[in-house]
Length: 342
Ligand code: KG4
Ligand code: ZN
Picture 1 (cartoon, rainbow, N blue to C red):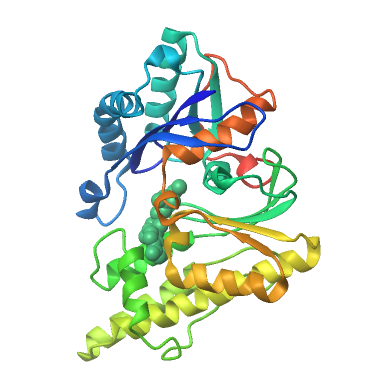
Picture 2: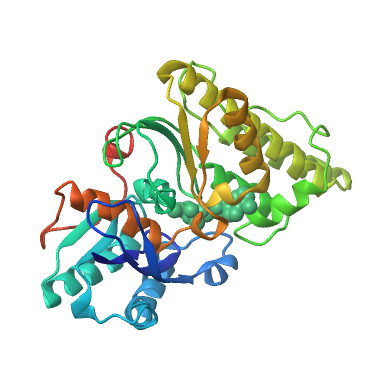
């Protein structure tokens, strides 16, 4: 089966062509095109939805053409078209959804709807079969979710952020420190040079026994600290702030996952999302799993951020489980399914 997969939920237009034989956990990535808009949004310090939609419109057709030609396949040879339908920026999602519908209708191909969060987790599937059930932890610019996965297609969200996503907190704090959006990668590098014990920042897990997170207290704490220092004419060490901030995030993630694994007693963790590009978090979760004899999977750095390959991987299992959409398919900005069943 040849999948054409499209992702446009936020500020990356991505199209991939992926081959995967029906019934087998094998994937060949034939092309993986990503057109990032981060440079366009950087001057505004975050994603501007209207600009994102327009940039997706400009990018999508040439990118799909390039994905097909780099894969050396024609549109007719594609067996199914997959697209991210939720959650995300509605204008951005609709560009991908309408392109996918047009493609499916023109060439008479099945259309598969993919949830973006499930897509991130599916970036882990391409290296071979993973035992189910598993716990998945997804952290990106827009999402922070703890998921109980009964199978590759049956996901239940058991924890999430009640305010900012982890990536969003990195970006907002980084921006206040004068870094360029998106700030996560630069803060990762600064953290490596700083002292993680320099500051005691507030934990970002909810202390109510749930698996939820809350990032707004940490963000306010650090922004206030930076404002006070500025008023006094003091210069704070950015490396120490990044190291201490990263430490409290890693510890809080480990705290919530520990509760989750104690409750469900699963033996496998899949981590995914743009924030999993963070070297300190990857290491912290590797250690966490080793100490508890939990099998750990995290995508290669190239598949942590938004991409089409992960959408193809998720689509394969949805399709093989019998899920296909018709021309009434629509984008959904966020769904209550985001909170419960995915
Ligand atoms: O998954 P993604 O590409 O897009 C969304 O679905 O949101 O994630 C982007 C987020 C941004 O907030 C970015 O700052 C963060 O991932 N990020 C990182 C790192 N690289 C990217 N955060 C922490 N450390 C990194 N190395
Ligand atoms: Zn994403």
